[in-house]
Length: 251
Image (cartoon, rainbow, N blue to C red):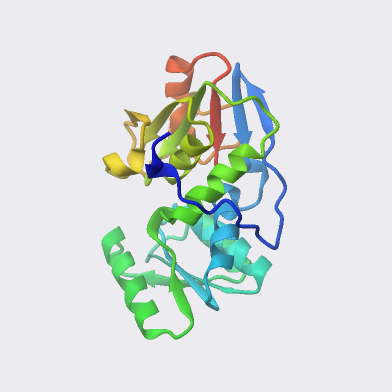
């Protein structure tokens, strides 16, 4: 494994220990079922990251359907921090509604293209003492290291083949670090993933836009985000080897 992936945060230990991911077999594929964890995989990532930063309020710019808003709301509730999420103005996704129930502050941005939302969140942090902006997609070495550590905590043999949905590539790069000998595939949605972001993963391109739900016939036989993870299943069914591992980040 290249030193590109050697971030050196192995000793980070969050004060709140979340349950280990559950792995189940579905149609010959090992599936990491983080749909069984409220807040999904990014809750694990933020659980590490937030404790590494001195701040009272954590701010994130989210697409309407972005799962990270819910993950952040759970972690901030757990750790006694304030979660503030910028989203496009308009019809609220269920993820936003659940985030509000957990205590998150939601700021709606008119004309909510992602770059506009990110700019608004950045300006807010610049004016708000004690606040901290989380990088989009959680693209930070500590979060990548958290994903590596989570993967290594699984009670399984190192997989020979690994699949994820890929946007900013954070989860995939963490798994690449954990399992350096595995063949890695990413199904790209909603983001023009760069060479740096994809690492050594080979890419398949989903036909769906980020905010589109995949057809029922293409969905996996377990709860999976209809605008995210579900879009990988048709590629896995067609191209994955028996015993391949798929990381399902949420429901």
